[in-house]
Picture 1 (tube, one colour):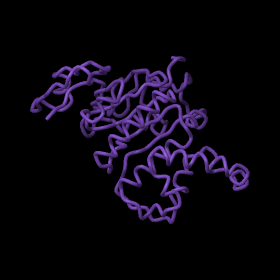
Picture 2 (cartoon, helix red, strand yellow):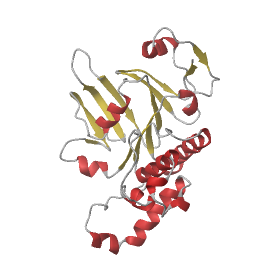
Picture 3 (spheres, helix red, strand yellow):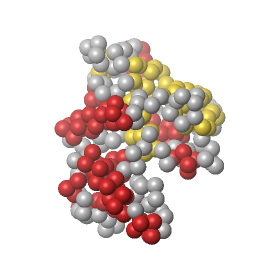
Picture 4 (cartoon, helix red, strand yellow):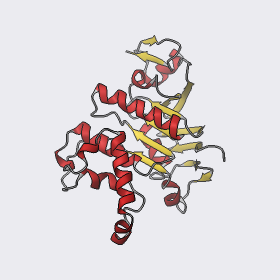
Length: 262
């Protein structure tokens, strides 16, 4: 497991009779881009919470960067991670600038003020770089409250990227983005994997949107019913296990992962 950025070993969560997650195991190495798909209530957000230690599994272990995740080493291991949680509809009320929001993702954000003054130029450079990734640098000093939903989502992504994580977890990052911005997002994530060797796990509903960008797709509905690699189609019976017998499946060309479903 030491060669893997992330490994899940027999992870379960919830009551034994009907667990939310049931015996999940997989490993990812540096630079791998994995999409997780599945119906509502499949456990997609829950598995990300388990990976970050926000939720303790009922059984099994999470290994991050070769170390078993525990209560005692969680803070140290999370320094190497970025996490974008699922977008909620609550409107922000605090008067924060875009720069303030992105700065919350920095490792030293909670330290005393003198640490910030001492290294302010370094921090400012990191904030501006993260904002440039998401095409929001021009909004550096804007009030976060008055941005559109899509703009705020891009700022949240910059906050997850500002510490230049080795592992990035994203829960429906394309929410509130238009189709053009969605494609730019997926291209950015692919670039981060290829050029910075970042490992990315992204929860998404639409496999057709991500299929040309990810290295693999995990089909989750309590269990991982299939883990498809690039160039591999997901068997039709797997779609039926996840979404029910009523759905129809249309196959993409061989360069895609999985299938498009109606």
